[in-house]
Figure 1 (cartoon, rainbow, N blue to C red):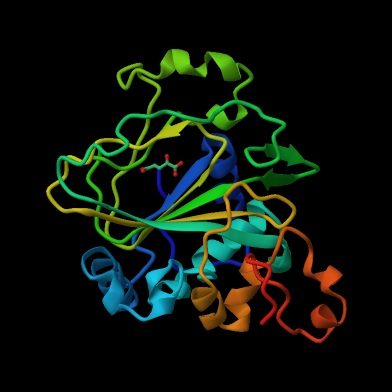
Figure 2 (cartoon, helix red, strand yellow):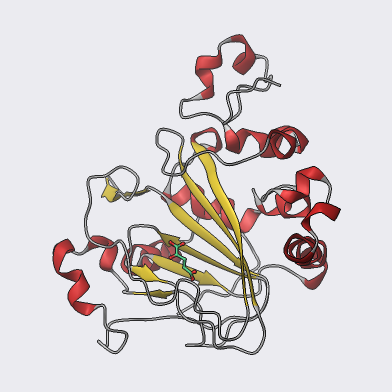
Length: 270
Ligand SMILES: O=C(O)CCC(=O)C(=O)O
């Protein structure tokens, strides 16, 4: 089931919240217009075919045109509902382009995660009327995806499964518990890293062009920092605040109070 809307409320609606909690993932079709996507798709094509021709900031995602996605209103309302309602407590800790042609079985069927976990990175908790999700994958599908032809597959609800160690019993793609999606270009897929999921062989004629962003709570980090200074320095202050170190920027003292740039993920103060 997907949710069709373009009127972005500041937080997820009750129904969207319940749906994400139930399944561990949610799809919003056709969020981006062709106009919004055009420069980002051009960046992705060049990144793949002639990366060096791009400005330094665009050679590292989510820099360049893709930076418009960092705090897109369609994603902020989700992050505020499931990670933290304060933007300063959100971090974008990883980003990559998944570009796959028909027949690409690069990672193929590799189910991972799932089940209740106390590891803060994969944690998915509900407490006092609120979701507290750890690492959260945001996938911008820039091309359309046909059902069962390579989009990410999930075991719905497995982020809350009590039988973590028994989930692999369902790993056969024909076990009957796997679900996937179809969507038009510009769709937004969001999932808790805690839900059991897998990449799939890409069997669709059109290539997959998807930008994967990993968001997390400011207090934890799963990925090794991999962003370039050129990319980080190119961002607007509003985008730059998603790349703070693993502490709350209030500990930057005067810099925080004066709204100066705190240290970036590479430890550089600019
Ligand atoms: O490639 C995909 O569709 C899924 C990628 C994945 O498994 C992940 O982001 O953890």
